[in-house]
Image (cartoon, rainbow over all chains, first blue to last red; front, side, top):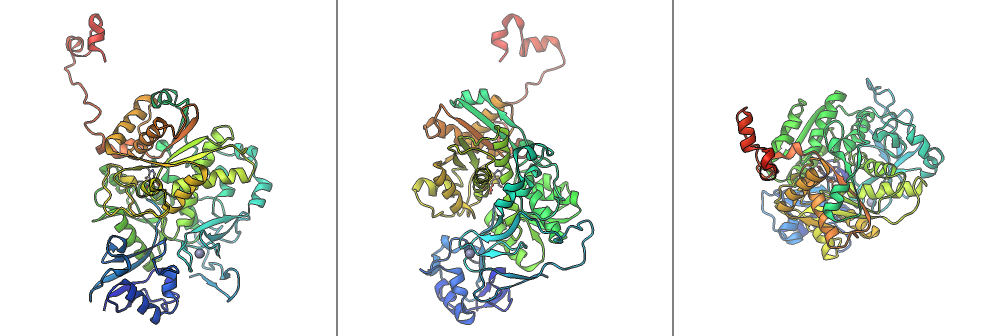
Length: 90
Length: 452
Ligand SMILES: Cc1ncc(COP(=O)(O)O)c(C=O)c1O
Ligand SMILES: [Zn+2]
Protein backbone atom coordinates (compact mmCIF):
# COMPACT_ATOMS: atom_id res chain seq x y z
CA UNK A 1 0.00 0.00 0.00
CA UNK A 2 1.15 3.57 -0.55
CA UNK A 3 2.59 5.24 2.53
CA UNK A 4 1.63 8.70 3.68
CA UNK A 5 3.93 10.99 5.68
CA UNK A 6 1.86 12.81 8.28
CA UNK A 7 2.97 16.32 9.32
CA UNK A 8 3.21 17.19 13.02
CA UNK A 9 -0.03 19.23 13.14
CA UNK A 10 -2.05 16.18 12.02
CA UNK A 11 -0.49 13.62 14.31
CA UNK A 12 -3.01 14.19 17.06
CA UNK A 13 -5.45 12.55 14.65
CA UNK A 14 -3.18 9.64 13.79
CA UNK A 15 -2.28 8.60 17.33
CA UNK A 16 1.07 10.36 16.84
CA UNK A 17 2.00 8.12 13.91
CA UNK A 18 4.27 9.94 11.46
CA UNK A 19 3.71 7.47 8.64
CA UNK A 20 0.52 5.60 7.84
CA UNK A 21 -0.58 3.25 5.05
CA UNK A 22 -3.64 4.01 3.00
CA UNK A 23 -5.19 2.71 -0.19
CA UNK A 24 -6.70 4.67 -3.06
CA UNK A 25 -6.39 4.92 -6.82
CA UNK A 26 -5.88 8.66 -6.65
CA UNK A 27 -5.43 11.48 -4.11
CA UNK A 28 -9.17 12.03 -3.60
CA UNK A 29 -9.75 8.37 -2.79
CA UNK A 30 -6.72 8.23 -0.59
CA UNK A 31 -7.91 11.22 1.45
CA UNK A 32 -11.37 9.65 1.81
CA UNK A 33 -9.82 6.42 3.08
CA UNK A 34 -7.50 8.29 5.43
CA UNK A 35 -10.51 10.11 6.81
CA UNK A 36 -12.24 6.81 7.54
CA UNK A 37 -9.22 5.58 9.46
CA UNK A 38 -8.56 8.94 11.15
CA UNK A 39 -11.80 10.89 11.30
CA UNK A 40 -11.42 14.61 10.72
CA UNK A 41 -8.20 14.36 8.75
CA UNK A 42 -9.67 15.28 5.38
CA UNK A 43 -11.23 18.47 6.72
CA UNK A 44 -7.87 19.65 7.92
CA UNK A 45 -6.20 19.09 4.57
CA UNK A 46 -9.06 20.19 2.29
CA UNK A 47 -11.52 23.06 2.31
CA UNK A 48 -15.31 22.77 1.98
CA UNK A 49 -14.99 22.16 -1.77
CA UNK A 50 -12.59 19.29 -1.28
CA UNK A 51 -9.60 21.14 -2.72
CA UNK A 52 -6.32 21.06 -0.86
CA UNK A 53 -6.08 24.14 1.38
CA UNK A 54 -3.98 27.16 0.42
CA UNK A 55 -1.32 26.52 3.04
CA UNK A 56 -0.88 22.78 2.48
CA UNK A 57 1.19 21.06 -0.17
CA UNK A 58 0.62 17.44 -1.14
CA UNK A 59 3.40 15.55 -2.91
CA UNK A 60 3.49 12.18 -4.67
CA UNK A 61 7.07 10.91 -4.68
CA UNK A 62 8.27 14.46 -4.18
CA UNK A 63 6.17 15.99 -7.00
CA UNK A 64 3.64 18.66 -6.00
CA UNK A 65 0.17 17.42 -7.06
CA UNK A 66 -0.54 20.91 -8.42
CA UNK A 67 1.98 20.07 -11.15
CA UNK A 68 0.31 16.69 -11.71
CA UNK A 69 -3.45 16.20 -11.82
CA UNK A 70 -4.29 17.73 -8.46
CA UNK A 71 -6.78 15.51 -6.60
CA UNK A 72 -7.08 13.20 -9.60
CA UNK A 73 -3.35 12.36 -9.49
CA UNK A 74 -3.05 8.57 -9.69
CA UNK A 75 -1.27 6.63 -7.00
CA UNK A 76 0.63 3.38 -7.38
CA UNK A 77 1.35 0.58 -4.95
CA UNK A 78 4.69 1.80 -3.60
CA UNK A 79 4.24 5.54 -3.88
CA UNK A 80 5.19 7.88 -1.05
CA UNK A 81 2.73 10.67 -0.36
CA UNK A 82 3.75 13.67 1.77
CA UNK A 83 1.44 16.21 3.32
CA UNK A 84 3.50 19.32 4.07
CA UNK A 85 2.55 22.72 5.48
CA UNK A 86 3.83 25.74 3.53
CA UNK A 87 7.24 27.01 4.68
CA UNK A 88 8.55 30.55 4.97
CA UNK A 89 11.42 31.79 2.85
CA UNK A 90 15.04 31.14 2.89
CA UNK B 1 8.28 17.91 26.17
CA UNK B 2 5.57 20.56 26.42
CA UNK B 3 1.88 20.16 26.21
CA UNK B 4 -1.30 22.08 25.75
CA UNK B 5 -4.77 20.96 26.48
CA UNK B 6 -7.71 21.93 24.37
CA UNK B 7 -10.97 21.92 26.31
CA UNK B 8 -14.02 21.35 24.16
CA UNK B 9 -15.63 24.70 23.54
CA UNK B 10 -12.83 26.67 25.15
CA UNK B 11 -11.68 29.59 23.01
CA UNK B 12 -8.01 28.76 23.15
CA UNK B 13 -5.67 26.10 24.43
CA UNK B 14 -4.84 26.06 28.10
CA UNK B 15 -1.17 25.59 28.79
CA UNK B 16 -0.80 22.86 31.32
CA UNK B 17 2.95 22.60 31.37
CA UNK B 18 5.06 25.61 30.62
CA UNK B 19 8.30 24.08 29.45
CA UNK B 20 9.35 22.90 32.86
CA UNK B 21 12.68 21.28 32.20
CA UNK B 22 15.98 21.81 33.97
CA UNK B 23 17.23 25.37 33.84
CA UNK B 24 19.39 25.70 30.76
CA UNK B 25 22.94 26.79 31.09
CA UNK B 26 23.37 30.32 29.88
CA UNK B 27 19.68 31.04 29.48
CA UNK B 28 18.35 31.42 32.99
CA UNK B 29 15.61 33.69 31.75
CA UNK B 30 13.87 30.70 30.14
CA UNK B 31 10.19 31.43 30.34
CA UNK B 32 10.23 32.30 34.02
CA UNK B 33 9.18 35.81 33.14
CA UNK B 34 6.99 35.89 30.05
CA UNK B 35 7.06 39.11 28.07
CA UNK B 36 4.31 41.51 29.13
CA UNK B 37 3.94 42.54 25.49
CA UNK B 38 4.16 39.36 23.42
CA UNK B 39 1.09 37.42 24.40
CA UNK B 40 0.34 34.52 22.08
CA UNK B 41 0.69 32.94 18.72
CA UNK B 42 -2.40 33.46 16.60
CA UNK B 43 -3.63 31.81 13.41
CA UNK B 44 -3.69 34.32 10.57
CA UNK B 45 -6.65 32.53 9.02
CA UNK B 46 -9.07 31.76 11.85
CA UNK B 47 -7.69 33.74 14.79
CA UNK B 48 -7.27 30.71 17.04
CA UNK B 49 -4.76 31.43 19.83
CA UNK B 50 -1.83 29.15 20.65
CA UNK B 51 0.87 29.17 23.32
CA UNK B 52 4.27 30.66 22.43
CA UNK B 53 5.99 27.40 21.56
CA UNK B 54 7.84 25.90 18.61
CA UNK B 55 4.73 25.46 16.49
CA UNK B 56 3.95 27.16 13.21
CA UNK B 57 0.63 26.11 11.73
CA UNK B 58 -2.94 26.07 12.94
CA UNK B 59 -4.33 22.65 13.86
CA UNK B 60 -7.55 23.38 12.04
CA UNK B 61 -6.68 24.96 8.71
CA UNK B 62 -2.87 24.93 8.37
CA UNK B 63 -2.95 28.74 8.52
CA UNK B 64 0.41 30.25 9.56
CA UNK B 65 0.74 31.23 13.21
CA UNK B 66 1.82 34.76 13.89
CA UNK B 67 3.05 36.60 16.99
CA UNK B 68 0.31 38.55 18.72
CA UNK B 69 1.01 41.50 21.02
CA UNK B 70 -0.70 43.59 23.64
CA UNK B 71 -0.45 46.87 21.75
CA UNK B 72 -2.09 48.88 24.53
CA UNK B 73 0.67 47.76 26.90
CA UNK B 74 3.34 48.56 24.32
CA UNK B 75 1.82 51.96 23.63
CA UNK B 76 1.99 52.84 27.31
CA UNK B 77 5.79 52.41 27.37
CA UNK B 78 7.24 52.73 23.88
CA UNK B 79 8.04 56.25 22.70
CA UNK B 80 10.28 57.71 19.99
CA UNK B 81 12.55 59.05 22.73
CA UNK B 82 12.91 55.65 24.39
CA UNK B 83 13.76 54.01 21.09
CA UNK B 84 16.25 56.74 20.20
CA UNK B 85 17.98 56.36 23.56
CA UNK B 86 18.84 52.72 22.84
CA UNK B 87 21.82 51.18 21.04
CA UNK B 88 21.70 51.32 17.25
CA UNK B 89 20.57 47.76 16.53
CA UNK B 90 17.30 46.12 15.55
CA UNK B 91 16.71 45.33 19.24
CA UNK B 92 15.81 48.95 19.95
CA UNK B 93 12.28 47.84 18.98
CA UNK B 94 12.35 44.85 21.30
CA UNK B 95 8.84 45.33 22.69
CA UNK B 96 7.64 44.52 19.17
CA UNK B 97 9.67 41.34 18.86
CA UNK B 98 8.50 37.90 19.99
CA UNK B 99 10.86 36.84 22.74
CA UNK B 100 10.35 36.73 26.50
CA UNK B 101 13.66 37.76 28.02
CA UNK B 102 16.71 39.65 26.83
CA UNK B 103 17.87 38.84 23.30
CA UNK B 104 20.78 36.42 23.48
CA UNK B 105 21.73 36.06 19.82
CA UNK B 106 22.55 38.84 17.38
CA UNK B 107 22.67 41.85 19.68
CA UNK B 108 24.49 43.89 17.01
CA UNK B 109 22.22 43.08 14.08
CA UNK B 110 20.44 45.80 12.16
CA UNK B 111 20.27 49.57 12.06
CA UNK B 112 21.90 49.53 8.66
CA UNK B 113 22.28 52.80 6.74
CA UNK B 114 19.39 54.42 4.92
CA UNK B 115 21.26 56.08 2.07
CA UNK B 116 19.89 59.03 0.11
CA UNK B 117 20.86 58.11 -3.44
CA UNK B 118 20.58 61.28 -5.52
CA UNK B 119 22.56 60.12 -8.53
CA UNK B 120 20.62 56.86 -8.76
CA UNK B 121 17.36 58.81 -8.34
CA UNK B 122 18.31 60.81 -11.40
CA UNK B 123 19.30 57.72 -13.36
CA UNK B 124 15.97 56.05 -12.57
CA UNK B 125 14.00 59.23 -13.14
CA UNK B 126 12.51 59.86 -9.71
CA UNK B 127 12.65 62.96 -7.50
CA UNK B 128 13.90 61.28 -4.33
CA UNK B 129 15.31 57.81 -3.68
CA UNK B 130 16.63 56.03 -0.60
CA UNK B 131 18.46 52.72 -0.35
CA UNK B 132 17.89 50.69 2.81
CA UNK B 133 21.31 49.08 2.71
CA UNK B 134 21.18 45.63 4.28
CA UNK B 135 24.18 44.57 2.18
CA UNK B 136 26.14 45.66 5.26
CA UNK B 137 23.98 43.99 7.86
CA UNK B 138 25.94 42.31 10.65
CA UNK B 139 27.30 39.64 10.67
CA UNK B 140 26.53 37.94 7.31
CA UNK B 141 25.71 40.81 4.97
CA UNK B 142 22.03 40.19 4.33
CA UNK B 143 18.69 41.04 5.93
CA UNK B 144 18.47 37.41 7.08
CA UNK B 145 20.52 38.29 10.18
CA UNK B 146 17.39 40.07 11.39
CA UNK B 147 15.16 37.01 11.23
CA UNK B 148 17.84 34.67 12.55
CA UNK B 149 18.61 36.91 15.51
CA UNK B 150 14.99 36.62 16.65
CA UNK B 151 14.59 32.94 15.77
CA UNK B 152 17.75 31.88 17.61
CA UNK B 153 17.11 34.09 20.63
CA UNK B 154 13.74 32.40 20.89
CA UNK B 155 15.27 28.96 20.20
CA UNK B 156 17.52 29.46 23.25
CA UNK B 157 14.52 30.44 25.36
CA UNK B 158 12.71 27.30 24.25
CA UNK B 159 15.73 25.17 25.09
CA UNK B 160 16.84 24.01 21.64
CA UNK B 161 20.40 22.76 21.30
CA UNK B 162 20.33 22.09 17.55
CA UNK B 163 19.08 24.61 15.03
CA UNK B 164 18.58 24.23 11.30
CA UNK B 165 17.08 25.80 8.20
CA UNK B 166 16.09 25.31 4.59
CA UNK B 167 17.75 28.04 2.61
CA UNK B 168 18.39 29.60 -0.78
CA UNK B 169 21.76 30.71 0.65
CA UNK B 170 21.54 33.82 2.78
CA UNK B 171 19.55 32.24 5.57
CA UNK B 172 22.06 29.38 5.71
CA UNK B 173 24.94 31.88 6.09
CA UNK B 174 23.15 33.65 8.89
CA UNK B 175 22.06 30.54 10.78
CA UNK B 176 25.60 29.14 10.54
CA UNK B 177 27.26 32.32 11.82
CA UNK B 178 24.82 33.17 14.56
CA UNK B 179 24.60 29.56 15.76
CA UNK B 180 28.40 29.46 15.91
CA UNK B 181 28.57 32.57 18.05
CA UNK B 182 25.79 31.29 20.32
CA UNK B 183 27.37 27.84 20.65
CA UNK B 184 24.46 26.01 19.06
CA UNK B 185 24.92 23.05 16.75
CA UNK B 186 23.52 23.74 13.28
CA UNK B 187 22.45 22.09 10.06
CA UNK B 188 21.74 24.08 6.92
CA UNK B 189 20.03 22.51 3.92
CA UNK B 190 20.46 24.16 0.54
CA UNK B 191 19.80 23.37 -3.13
CA UNK B 192 22.87 21.84 -4.76
CA UNK B 193 23.32 24.60 -7.37
CA UNK B 194 24.02 27.62 -5.14
CA UNK B 195 26.74 30.20 -5.74
CA UNK B 196 30.16 29.41 -4.28
CA UNK B 197 30.09 32.46 -2.03
CA UNK B 198 26.92 31.29 -0.39
CA UNK B 199 28.22 27.75 0.14
CA UNK B 200 31.61 28.85 1.49
CA UNK B 201 29.84 31.51 3.53
CA UNK B 202 28.17 28.71 5.46
CA UNK B 203 30.95 26.11 5.55
CA UNK B 204 33.43 28.50 7.15
CA UNK B 205 31.43 28.59 10.39
CA UNK B 206 31.77 24.84 10.88
CA UNK B 207 28.09 24.15 10.34
CA UNK B 208 26.77 20.98 8.69
CA UNK B 209 26.01 22.01 5.12
CA UNK B 210 23.67 19.55 3.43
CA UNK B 211 23.33 20.17 -0.26
CA UNK B 212 20.24 18.63 -1.83
CA UNK B 213 19.74 17.53 -5.43
CA UNK B 214 16.69 19.53 -6.36
CA UNK B 215 15.16 22.98 -6.18
CA UNK B 216 14.48 24.91 -2.98
CA UNK B 217 10.94 23.61 -2.70
CA UNK B 218 12.28 20.06 -2.48
CA UNK B 219 14.70 21.19 0.22
CA UNK B 220 11.74 22.70 2.04
CA UNK B 221 9.73 19.52 1.92
CA UNK B 222 12.60 17.48 3.29
CA UNK B 223 13.12 20.01 6.10
CA UNK B 224 9.49 19.80 7.04
CA UNK B 225 9.81 16.04 7.29
CA UNK B 226 13.02 16.26 9.34
CA UNK B 227 11.54 18.92 11.62
CA UNK B 228 8.57 16.65 12.28
CA UNK B 229 10.84 13.79 13.22
CA UNK B 230 13.67 15.27 15.28
CA UNK B 231 13.47 17.87 17.98
CA UNK B 232 15.45 20.51 16.11
CA UNK B 233 14.66 24.17 15.92
CA UNK B 234 14.14 24.86 12.23
CA UNK B 235 14.19 28.63 11.98
CA UNK B 236 11.82 28.76 9.02
CA UNK B 237 9.69 25.74 9.93
CA UNK B 238 8.73 25.28 13.59
CA UNK B 239 10.31 28.61 14.61
CA UNK B 240 8.75 30.46 11.69
CA UNK B 241 6.44 32.71 13.77
CA UNK B 242 9.53 34.09 15.56
CA UNK B 243 11.75 34.15 12.48
CA UNK B 244 9.26 36.07 10.38
CA UNK B 245 8.81 38.89 12.90
CA UNK B 246 12.49 39.79 12.63
CA UNK B 247 11.86 41.24 9.16
CA UNK B 248 9.67 43.95 10.67
CA UNK B 249 12.76 45.70 11.97
CA UNK B 250 13.75 46.66 8.42
CA UNK B 251 10.49 48.62 8.17
CA UNK B 252 10.82 50.11 11.66
CA UNK B 253 14.29 51.38 10.83
CA UNK B 254 13.19 52.87 7.51
CA UNK B 255 10.44 54.84 9.25
CA UNK B 256 12.70 56.01 12.07
CA UNK B 257 15.54 56.93 9.70
CA UNK B 258 13.17 58.98 7.55
CA UNK B 259 12.51 61.07 10.66
CA UNK B 260 9.56 59.04 11.97
CA UNK B 261 7.71 59.02 8.70
CA UNK B 262 6.44 56.33 6.37
CA UNK B 263 7.90 56.31 2.86
CA UNK B 264 5.50 57.02 0.01
CA UNK B 265 6.73 53.98 -1.92
CA UNK B 266 8.66 50.91 -0.72
CA UNK B 267 10.02 48.34 -3.17
CA UNK B 268 10.74 44.92 -1.65
CA UNK B 269 12.22 41.76 -3.21
CA UNK B 270 10.07 38.66 -2.79
CA UNK B 271 10.95 34.98 -2.47
CA UNK B 272 8.36 33.50 -0.09
CA UNK B 273 6.83 36.97 0.32
CA UNK B 274 7.47 37.03 4.05
CA UNK B 275 9.69 40.15 4.13
CA UNK B 276 7.12 42.18 2.20
CA UNK B 277 4.23 41.24 4.47
CA UNK B 278 6.32 42.00 7.55
CA UNK B 279 7.39 45.42 6.27
CA UNK B 280 3.69 46.11 5.80
CA UNK B 281 3.03 44.94 9.36
CA UNK B 282 5.82 47.14 10.70
CA UNK B 283 4.30 50.27 9.14
CA UNK B 284 0.87 49.34 10.51
CA UNK B 285 2.29 48.78 13.99
CA UNK B 286 4.06 52.16 14.03
CA UNK B 287 0.78 53.78 12.98
CA UNK B 288 -1.16 51.91 15.66
CA UNK B 289 1.36 52.96 18.31
CA UNK B 290 1.31 56.56 17.17
CA UNK B 291 5.04 56.52 16.42
CA UNK B 292 4.39 57.84 12.90
CA UNK B 293 1.64 60.05 11.49
CA UNK B 294 -0.83 58.73 8.97
CA UNK B 295 0.37 59.31 5.43
CA UNK B 296 -0.29 57.37 2.24
CA UNK B 297 2.18 54.56 1.61
CA UNK B 298 2.37 51.90 -1.09
CA UNK B 299 4.33 48.65 -1.09
CA UNK B 300 5.62 46.98 -4.28
CA UNK B 301 6.99 43.46 -4.70
CA UNK B 302 9.89 42.56 -7.00
CA UNK B 303 10.68 39.14 -8.48
CA UNK B 304 12.79 37.63 -11.23
CA UNK B 305 10.72 36.66 -14.30
CA UNK B 306 12.29 33.18 -14.16
CA UNK B 307 10.57 32.60 -10.83
CA UNK B 308 7.72 35.08 -10.42
CA UNK B 309 4.74 33.21 -9.00
CA UNK B 310 3.64 36.14 -6.83
CA UNK B 311 4.22 38.85 -9.43
CA UNK B 312 2.43 36.86 -12.11
CA UNK B 313 -0.58 36.20 -9.87
CA UNK B 314 -0.75 39.89 -8.96
CA UNK B 315 -0.59 40.87 -12.63
CA UNK B 316 -3.35 38.38 -13.43
CA UNK B 317 -5.44 40.07 -10.77
CA UNK B 318 -5.80 36.99 -8.57
CA UNK B 319 -4.56 35.93 -5.16
CA UNK B 320 -4.23 32.32 -6.24
CA UNK B 321 -0.50 31.80 -6.53
CA UNK B 322 0.41 29.16 -9.08
CA UNK B 323 3.66 27.46 -8.06
CA UNK B 324 6.60 27.52 -10.48
CA UNK B 325 7.83 23.95 -11.00
CA UNK B 326 11.35 24.78 -12.21
CA UNK B 327 12.64 28.21 -11.23
CA UNK B 328 15.17 29.49 -13.77
CA UNK B 329 16.94 32.71 -12.82
CA UNK B 330 20.31 34.02 -11.69
CA UNK B 331 18.48 35.42 -8.63
CA UNK B 332 18.83 32.14 -6.78
CA UNK B 333 18.14 33.73 -3.40
CA UNK B 334 14.63 34.52 -4.64
CA UNK B 335 14.03 31.22 -6.43
CA UNK B 336 11.16 29.87 -4.37
CA UNK B 337 8.56 28.28 -6.63
CA UNK B 338 5.97 27.69 -3.90
CA UNK B 339 5.91 30.91 -1.89
CA UNK B 340 4.29 30.33 1.50
CA UNK B 341 3.37 33.98 2.04
CA UNK B 342 2.51 34.78 -1.57
CA UNK B 343 -1.16 35.08 -0.77
CA UNK B 344 -0.55 37.57 2.03
CA UNK B 345 2.05 39.49 0.03
CA UNK B 346 -0.55 40.04 -2.70
CA UNK B 347 -3.00 41.34 -0.13
CA UNK B 348 -0.39 43.69 1.33
CA UNK B 349 0.34 45.13 -2.10
CA UNK B 350 -3.37 45.43 -2.90
CA UNK B 351 -4.31 46.98 0.43
CA UNK B 352 -1.64 49.66 0.13
CA UNK B 353 -2.30 50.35 -3.54
CA UNK B 354 1.05 48.99 -4.69
CA UNK B 355 1.69 46.33 -7.30
CA UNK B 356 4.24 43.72 -8.39
CA UNK B 357 6.88 43.72 -11.12
CA UNK B 358 9.40 41.21 -12.42
CA UNK B 359 12.55 41.42 -14.50
CA UNK B 360 14.79 39.29 -16.71
CA UNK B 361 18.31 38.11 -15.89
CA UNK B 362 19.77 40.83 -18.15
CA UNK B 363 17.79 43.45 -16.28
CA UNK B 364 19.03 42.03 -12.97
CA UNK B 365 22.65 42.46 -14.07
CA UNK B 366 21.87 46.00 -15.22
CA UNK B 367 20.20 46.66 -11.85
CA UNK B 368 23.29 45.50 -9.97
CA UNK B 369 25.48 47.77 -12.11
CA UNK B 370 23.19 50.79 -11.78
CA UNK B 371 23.20 50.49 -7.99
CA UNK B 372 26.97 50.12 -7.94
CA UNK B 373 27.78 52.87 -10.44
CA UNK B 374 25.25 55.42 -9.22
CA UNK B 375 25.09 54.72 -5.48
CA UNK B 376 28.34 52.92 -4.70
CA UNK B 377 26.56 49.88 -3.32
CA UNK B 378 27.40 46.34 -4.43
CA UNK B 379 24.32 44.16 -4.06
CA UNK B 380 23.63 40.54 -4.82
CA UNK B 381 21.16 39.42 -7.46
CA UNK B 382 18.13 40.13 -5.23
CA UNK B 383 19.29 43.76 -5.11
CA UNK B 384 19.54 43.77 -8.89
CA UNK B 385 15.95 42.52 -9.03
CA UNK B 386 14.77 45.31 -6.74
CA UNK B 387 16.54 48.08 -8.67
CA UNK B 388 15.47 46.70 -12.06
CA UNK B 389 11.84 46.39 -10.99
CA UNK B 390 11.88 49.87 -9.42
CA UNK B 391 13.22 51.24 -12.70
CA UNK B 392 10.32 49.64 -14.57
CA UNK B 393 7.75 50.82 -12.03
CA UNK B 394 9.03 54.39 -12.32
CA UNK B 395 9.23 54.26 -16.12
CA UNK B 396 5.65 53.02 -16.35
CA UNK B 397 4.44 55.74 -13.99
CA UNK B 398 3.21 53.28 -11.38
CA UNK B 399 5.63 54.99 -9.04
CA UNK B 400 5.17 58.68 -9.94
CA UNK B 401 8.36 60.50 -10.93
CA UNK B 402 7.63 63.37 -8.56
CA UNK B 403 7.49 61.12 -5.48
CA UNK B 404 9.93 59.59 -3.01
CA UNK B 405 10.76 55.88 -2.79
CA UNK B 406 12.76 53.48 -0.65
CA UNK B 407 14.39 50.38 -2.17
CA UNK B 408 15.07 47.48 0.17
CA UNK B 409 18.48 46.13 -0.83
CA UNK B 410 18.80 42.90 1.06
CA UNK B 411 22.12 41.15 0.38
CA UNK B 412 25.77 41.76 -0.56
CA UNK B 413 27.16 41.33 -4.06
CA UNK B 414 30.31 39.47 -3.10
CA UNK B 415 28.09 36.47 -2.39
CA UNK B 416 26.83 36.16 -5.97
CA UNK B 417 29.87 36.99 -8.08
CA UNK B 418 28.99 34.40 -10.70
CA UNK B 419 26.04 36.52 -11.78
CA UNK B 420 28.16 39.41 -13.03
CA UNK B 421 31.51 37.78 -13.66
CA UNK B 422 32.77 39.03 -17.02
CA UNK B 423 29.90 41.52 -17.32
CA UNK B 424 31.64 44.51 -15.77
CA UNK B 425 34.74 44.52 -17.96
CA UNK B 426 38.18 43.22 -17.01
CA UNK B 427 41.18 44.97 -15.44
CA UNK B 428 43.67 46.36 -17.91
CA UNK B 429 47.00 44.70 -17.17
CA UNK B 430 50.25 46.53 -17.89
CA UNK B 431 53.87 46.33 -16.84
CA UNK B 432 55.03 48.65 -14.05
CA UNK B 433 56.17 51.26 -16.57
CA UNK B 434 55.13 54.91 -16.80
CA UNK B 435 55.43 54.74 -20.57
CA UNK B 436 53.00 51.84 -20.79
CA UNK B 437 50.69 53.67 -18.41
CA UNK B 438 50.69 56.73 -20.64
CA UNK B 439 50.40 54.74 -23.83
CA UNK B 440 47.68 52.39 -22.71
CA UNK B 441 45.82 54.03 -19.84
CA UNK B 442 46.13 57.77 -19.46
CA UNK B 443 47.77 60.36 -21.66
CA UNK B 444 47.32 63.92 -20.40
CA UNK B 445 47.93 65.31 -23.91
CA UNK B 446 45.24 63.10 -25.28
CA UNK B 447 43.17 62.67 -22.12
CA UNK B 448 39.76 62.49 -23.74
CA UNK B 449 40.82 59.58 -25.91
CA UNK B 450 42.67 57.53 -23.30
CA UNK B 451 40.74 58.17 -20.12
CA UNK B 452 37.29 56.77 -19.75
C1 LIG C 1 18.79 38.59 -0.32
C2 LIG C 1 17.37 38.21 -0.14
N1 LIG C 1 16.43 39.13 -0.35
C3 LIG C 1 15.12 38.85 -0.21
C4 LIG C 1 14.67 37.59 0.13
C5 LIG C 1 13.20 37.36 0.21
O1 LIG C 1 12.71 36.91 1.40
P1 LIG C 1 11.24 36.38 1.63
O2 LIG C 1 11.30 34.90 1.53
O3 LIG C 1 10.94 36.86 3.00
O4 LIG C 1 10.33 36.97 0.58
C6 LIG C 1 15.62 36.59 0.36
C7 LIG C 1 15.19 35.23 0.75
O5 LIG C 1 15.86 34.28 0.79
C8 LIG C 1 17.00 36.90 0.22
O6 LIG C 1 17.96 35.98 0.42
ZN1 LIG D 1 -6.56 28.57 11.90
